[in-house]
Length: 94
Image (cartoon, rainbow, N blue to C red; front, side, top):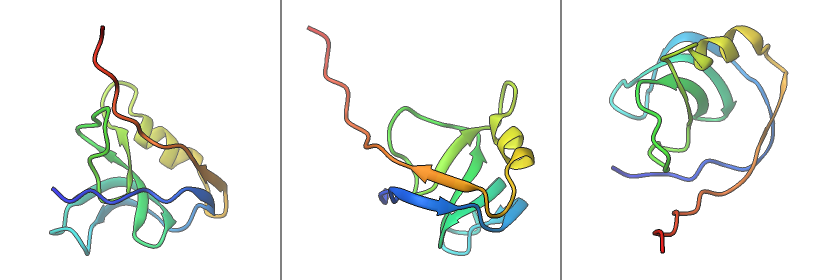
């Protein structure tokens, strides 16, 4: 899998789709999608590993209390979104 870097910066929430299908990645389903920047979205996903695993999108869990749906329902287009940080591979114990 090719992993792209999620852009850091100050953005505003763009378009929202209860169910969006990626035009770039094999029509992949992206439930509860909120556009961050271009082809980068915050969206629900069934698996949210503790390491980078997307093409730049920000994955949110669909299980439990469904944070992806909660965020989708809460956010409005134009809401400020700040993305920051960098994932670093954990060091082995000992």
